[in-house]
Image (spheres, helix red, strand yellow):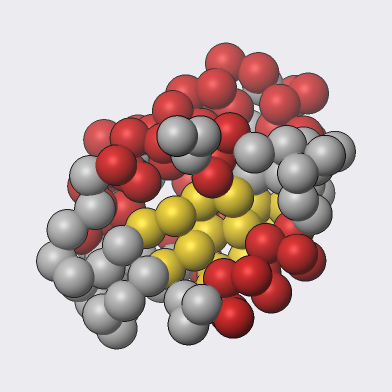
Length: 123
């Protein structure tokens, strides 16, 4: 099974992903990554759109912990649609790959009655 994170723009656009998620009753959180050029700003952006608690750290371990918990959000599926992810991929490919890997791991291990899905359209 291909995770949502691995889908490309040939498969889906950010708008299509958001509509599909809303149609199935998921809560959609759209991250506009057009200006996110490094790991720190991207982690801050994800934290903002998913309303992470203020005490949350801004590193990959904290990202994973929050994405697999989401207990401060309503129960149900939460979908992160990361549009403009290519900006980070171009400016910091290593950070992009690491964040993408955390998103994939979190999809497989969500808990607390809150499923997590990430869609990262290319292009």
